[in-house]
Amino acid sequence: MLFILFMSWFYPFSHFSIYKIFTYKPTEVLYHNDKTYEDILNKFTESYEKNLAKGIEKYSNRDQDVTVMQTQYILPIFEQDWLIGTDPVSMDQHKLDEMLVDVKQSRDT
Image 1 (cartoon, rainbow, N blue to C red):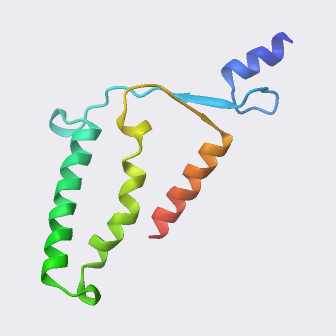
Image 2: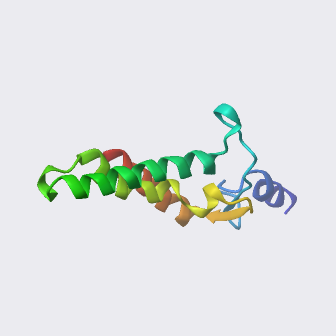
């Protein structure tokens, strides 16, 4: 019993673990010029929205910038609450599998 408790605590996704869950605890990670992930993401989103508005205004649907148009499908991956928030988030195997599929689809896009 002690072995199973130890494995569940230190290795939540081992075959011996009873309740397979992982808790992500965000930390204050600083980037270039002391900007946080959220600051960088907000700046990118502003830039993207300007480019999107300019593209819609200037071009027909056929001639719009492909990169700007594809960004709308990729951006939600980077705007998830667990990436931006400061509260710990628990994830099970199903949630991690969903994230893996989303990341693979974003790479293909």
